[in-house]
Amino acid sequence: MVIETATGEPLRMVLVVGVAGSGKSTVGRLLAERLGWEYQDADAFHSEAGRARMAAGHALTDSDRGPWLDAIGAWMGQALAAGRRAVVTCSALKRAYRDKLLAGHPGVLLVYLHGSRELLESRLAGRRGHFFPANLLDSQLAVLQEPEPDEHALTVEIDQSPEAAVAAVSSLLQGEATGGAGAAGRDGERALARDGPAASSSPTGASWRLVRGDQSAVVAELGGALREYAVHGRPLLDGFSAGSAVTGGRGQLLVPWPNRVGGGHYRFGGRSLQLPLTEVEKGNAIHGLLRWALWRPLARTDDSVVLGTTLCPQPGYPFLLDVRVTYRLEPDGLRTAVHATNTGTEPAPYGVGQHPYLTVGTDLVDSAVLTVPARYLLRADDRGLPLGRESVDGTPYDFRTARPLGDLRLDTAFTGLDRTADGRATVRLAHPSGRHGVDLWLGEGTRYVQVFTGDTLAGPERRRGVAVEPMSCPPDAFRSGTDLTVLEPGATHVLRWGLSPWGDA
Image 1: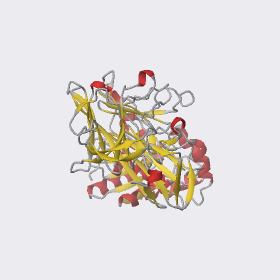
Image 2: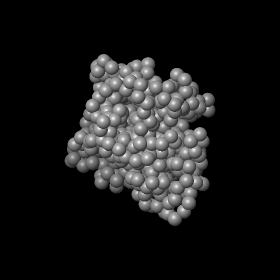
Image 3: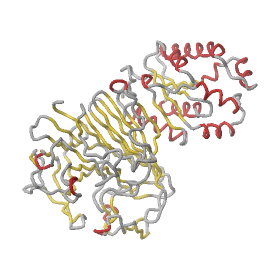
Image 4: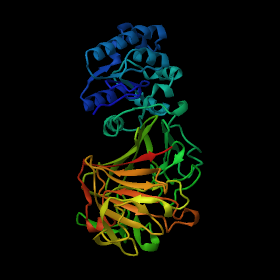
């Protein structure tokens, strides 16, 4: 895989920057190990006089730093000229310092480690045997100029372990990225600034806006939900506004099970377990345990964000998972990947899904044209629990050939997905004109898809969008065991899906 920087150059070097205590050396070294690249710490280029000055509690001046930056830049140039790939760490507090290091060096990605003063102080207070004293932190923060939008930095939060920080960076560099690591937003818009009301006044917490060319997306802190996706200003998701609560599961992540668990009761590992009944009217546990949790940003660029949370052991699910979701705008649309790692000491039952509602601009979904490349459906009872698998042949649920939804009511799981050579199955929603629409592709980890026409939603939300829900397992998998993932300690499951717009603007 060839990873590109914002300039379109292949990525050949990573420059990790941040103030003292941000963990540059640890993160840089771990990242270099993960990539299999060379590692170089800028501290190695300090003169003895510079080290002594800092050890005595005196901050370096611009003139002190000049020769140091020249030496680092020269090393970077030599490494690039020799075709070596490397991770380099340097405080590079000012824009001018970073510009000096990056000048004439295409293919270098800037990674900025961001953290609060309190966290930085606590880290420096616990550091031993380093020439940089903790009392110089104020001088660094006083001159710090955080990266500006046109620097296309990948920002990483440091209130996580170094290993988790490197995993978040890698999600953007390797797992989900094939280009544009930090492409600029349209009209220079600062992507991933908090969008809309502050977390304290919004029912869904903070939110972050991603921008790439004519695409934009908004991700919410509550549930890590995908709130909006639009192309050329045309919404392709029937989402929710900044000041509104989430209804109908819109955009929510469904962890550690999608859909329903009948009665909330299941057996696993010789134990009888009872989940809270969150679909009270039908006596089911529905859509997992993280829909209403606050997910925090782990890493972000102009056009991508990684959010994460921890699912702690609790009644009905006594297992420990670290979960992160990556959203990234690519030239062909939005890519999503959900990683879950069992950080506990025993195997854990696991399933995952997500609940976006698609729209092609029609008032109701009746006239929208649907394609679902599935050979089987799961018949369900009046509680939404599967009764068995049936062929779609000869049924109203056969959407292998595109046709309008009409008045058909769908809350149906499909499987037996026909995939292309790249391993994807694609559900398409098209405008009645046939001139534009959106594809939702199902990639790694997606064995089922639930299609819901919103007939049970309240008032104006009814049949306004079509929920197309990627799922790793069918409804009630905790009880049936069908395609249920058993995550062994240390194991990770990945679910990938995405949105691709098509047609006229």
